[in-house]
Image 1 (spheres, rainbow, N blue to C red):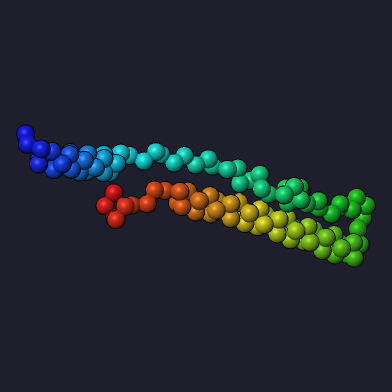
Image 2 (tube, rainbow, N blue to C red):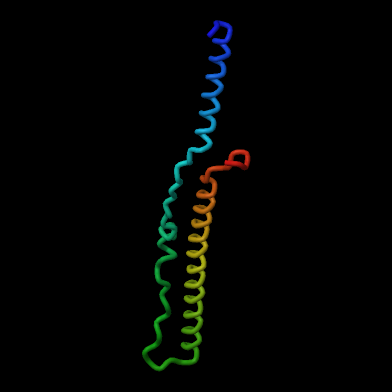
Length: 115
Protein backbone atom coordinates (compact mmCIF):
# COMPACT_ATOMS: atom_id res chain seq x y z
CA UNK A 1 0.00 0.00 0.00
CA UNK A 2 1.32 3.41 -0.80
CA UNK A 3 2.06 6.08 1.72
CA UNK A 4 -0.60 8.43 0.32
CA UNK A 5 -3.44 6.13 1.34
CA UNK A 6 -2.19 5.47 4.88
CA UNK A 7 -3.78 8.65 6.41
CA UNK A 8 -7.07 7.91 4.66
CA UNK A 9 -7.00 4.35 5.95
CA UNK A 10 -6.37 5.61 9.51
CA UNK A 11 -9.23 8.13 9.14
CA UNK A 12 -11.57 5.44 7.85
CA UNK A 13 -10.61 3.15 10.71
CA UNK A 14 -11.15 5.90 13.31
CA UNK A 15 -14.54 6.88 11.87
CA UNK A 16 -15.61 3.24 11.78
CA UNK A 17 -14.69 2.82 15.45
CA UNK A 18 -16.55 6.01 16.34
CA UNK A 19 -19.69 4.82 14.55
CA UNK A 20 -19.47 1.43 16.25
CA UNK A 21 -19.15 3.12 19.64
CA UNK A 22 -22.24 5.21 18.96
CA UNK A 23 -24.18 2.17 17.85
CA UNK A 24 -23.14 0.14 20.86
CA UNK A 25 -24.24 2.93 23.19
CA UNK A 26 -27.67 3.05 21.57
CA UNK A 27 -28.16 -0.69 22.05
CA UNK A 28 -27.08 -0.78 25.65
CA UNK A 29 -29.94 -0.85 28.07
CA UNK A 30 -30.20 1.57 30.92
CA UNK A 31 -29.99 0.17 34.42
CA UNK A 32 -33.35 -0.38 36.08
CA UNK A 33 -34.50 2.26 38.53
CA UNK A 34 -35.57 0.70 41.78
CA UNK A 35 -37.73 2.88 43.95
CA UNK A 36 -38.37 2.00 47.53
CA UNK A 37 -41.93 2.46 48.57
CA UNK A 38 -41.49 4.67 51.57
CA UNK A 39 -43.73 4.10 54.52
CA UNK A 40 -45.95 7.11 54.04
CA UNK A 41 -47.94 6.18 57.09
CA UNK A 42 -44.84 6.82 59.20
CA UNK A 43 -45.18 10.52 58.35
CA UNK A 44 -48.50 10.78 60.18
CA UNK A 45 -47.83 12.51 63.51
CA UNK A 46 -48.67 10.76 66.75
CA UNK A 47 -51.30 13.40 67.61
CA UNK A 48 -53.37 12.18 64.66
CA UNK A 49 -52.83 8.52 65.57
CA UNK A 50 -54.13 8.82 69.12
CA UNK A 51 -57.69 7.77 69.86
CA UNK A 52 -60.15 10.57 70.39
CA UNK A 53 -61.77 10.00 73.76
CA UNK A 54 -65.51 10.07 73.97
CA UNK A 55 -67.57 11.56 76.75
CA UNK A 56 -68.24 9.28 79.72
CA UNK A 57 -71.92 8.36 79.94
CA UNK A 58 -73.77 9.07 83.11
CA UNK A 59 -74.25 6.08 85.38
CA UNK A 60 -77.06 7.54 87.44
CA UNK A 61 -80.35 8.83 86.18
CA UNK A 62 -79.47 11.69 83.83
CA UNK A 63 -81.47 14.83 83.40
CA UNK A 64 -82.38 16.27 80.03
CA UNK A 65 -79.56 18.78 80.40
CA UNK A 66 -77.09 15.98 81.12
CA UNK A 67 -78.17 14.16 77.94
CA UNK A 68 -77.76 17.34 75.89
CA UNK A 69 -74.25 17.88 77.29
CA UNK A 70 -73.41 14.22 76.62
CA UNK A 71 -74.70 14.38 73.03
CA UNK A 72 -72.86 17.62 72.37
CA UNK A 73 -69.60 16.18 73.78
CA UNK A 74 -69.92 13.00 71.72
CA UNK A 75 -70.57 15.05 68.56
CA UNK A 76 -67.47 17.16 69.24
CA UNK A 77 -65.39 14.01 69.75
CA UNK A 78 -66.74 12.54 66.51
CA UNK A 79 -65.92 15.75 64.64
CA UNK A 80 -62.35 15.62 65.98
CA UNK A 81 -61.98 11.94 65.03
CA UNK A 82 -63.24 12.60 61.49
CA UNK A 83 -60.93 15.60 61.10
CA UNK A 84 -57.95 13.49 62.23
CA UNK A 85 -58.86 10.73 59.78
CA UNK A 86 -59.03 13.20 56.88
CA UNK A 87 -55.69 14.72 57.92
CA UNK A 88 -54.05 11.26 58.03
CA UNK A 89 -55.32 10.41 54.56
CA UNK A 90 -54.15 13.78 53.22
CA UNK A 91 -50.61 13.16 54.54
CA UNK A 92 -50.49 9.67 53.02
CA UNK A 93 -51.87 10.84 49.65
CA UNK A 94 -49.35 13.68 49.45
CA UNK A 95 -46.53 11.27 50.25
CA UNK A 96 -47.68 8.80 47.59
CA UNK A 97 -48.00 11.60 45.02
CA UNK A 98 -44.48 12.80 45.87
CA UNK A 99 -43.10 9.27 45.47
CA UNK A 100 -44.86 8.82 42.11
CA UNK A 101 -43.51 12.14 40.81
CA UNK A 102 -40.00 11.23 41.95
CA UNK A 103 -40.16 7.84 40.23
CA UNK A 104 -41.42 9.50 37.04
CA UNK A 105 -38.61 12.05 37.13
CA UNK A 106 -36.02 9.28 37.54
CA UNK A 107 -37.16 7.33 34.47
CA UNK A 108 -34.72 7.61 31.58
CA UNK A 109 -35.75 10.04 28.89
CA UNK A 110 -35.88 9.10 25.24
CA UNK A 111 -33.07 10.30 23.01
CA UNK A 112 -34.61 12.23 20.09
CA UNK A 113 -37.80 10.22 20.60
CA UNK A 114 -36.08 7.12 19.17
CA UNK A 115 -34.23 5.38 21.98
